[in-house]
Structures are given as C-alpha cells and as structure tokens.
Length: 204
Image (tube, rainbow, N blue to C red; front, side):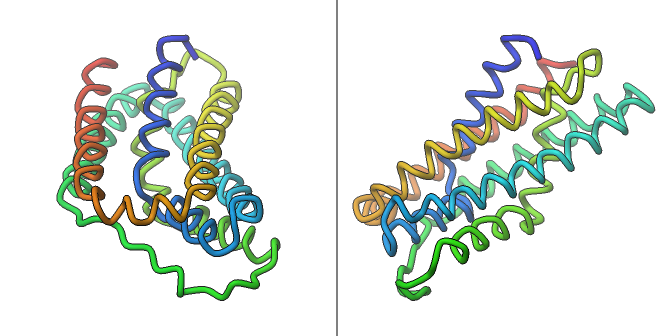
C-alpha cells in the first residue's frame, strides 16, 4: 500500500472510529457500568470481530478483482455511493441515547468479550460498510495479504484508542452526547459524504 493511500485510510479510520456505532456505544455503556479497565474485554472482542469482517470483505473483494479489474472500478463507485448514502442518514439521525440500566453490573470478562465480539462480527451493516470502504484502498498490483495486514492493524489501533478513551471517560461523555450529539452526527455524516464521493473520483 502506497504511503499516500495509507494516510487516507488512516484519516478515514479515525473518522469511522469517532462515528457513533454499536461497538462504540457498547464500550461507552460498559465503561459507565464497569470502568475503563474491565471494558478492555469488550473492546478486545470487538476488535477481533472487526478483523474477521475485514478479512472476509477484503479477500472476497480480492478474489473478485482477480477475475476482472473492471469489478474494482464498479465496486469503488457502488461503495462510494453507499458511503455517501450512509453519511446522509447519519446527518439526519438524532443524537444517540445510552441507557446504562440495560445490563447488570456484575458481568465477567468472558461475557464482556463475547458481547463485544458478537456486536462486531454479526452486524450486517458492518459487513456492508467494509465491503463499500475497502475497494477504495485496494491496489490489485500489490500483495493482498500485506494490504490486509496494514488495513487491519491501522483500523484496530484507531478503534482501540477511540473506544478505550470513550470507555474511560464514559461518565463525562454520556451527557455530552445528549447535548451536542446531533451536531456531531452532522459533522461525521458530512465526512462520510465527502469520502464516499471523493475516493472513487480519485481512483478513477
């Protein structure tokens, strides 16, 4: 993966990690219930789930691209439009609400890990999202395995830092989400629209 492509993916990963999603909200909830340190189990489970989804998407896309390079261009445009559509939905969505009463306070590490893993690995929207995003960064002339390693490591590091920061500051972040959550959604939605429209044009 070229350095400029990796930098674009890194910036995109940061934006994705900051966008409210099921695993981020789970880390927030578990942080408020159990504290940041124990929520590391939740985060670890989610990261493993993300890596599995990224592998499924990336190698599936890679196999398709090997049959015809035209498919990569098609996937980039379909994916870009899908990302833009997600951005519009996020722009229009209300602030997220987190209810810490939905789970008892005595969950063990194994339970937290399982919940984090299943939230990431079984979310069909996660599969669709990475299927739309990853074609923008795949270089068919380079090793797919190496690109997978770079993508997976970059995304999991940014996701870990974000989720752990959210979990550690859960008590302070929850009121903030209610107060400025809609504006935050609009900013993240605008980023998604920009990425969705700009990346296919850049790669065309």
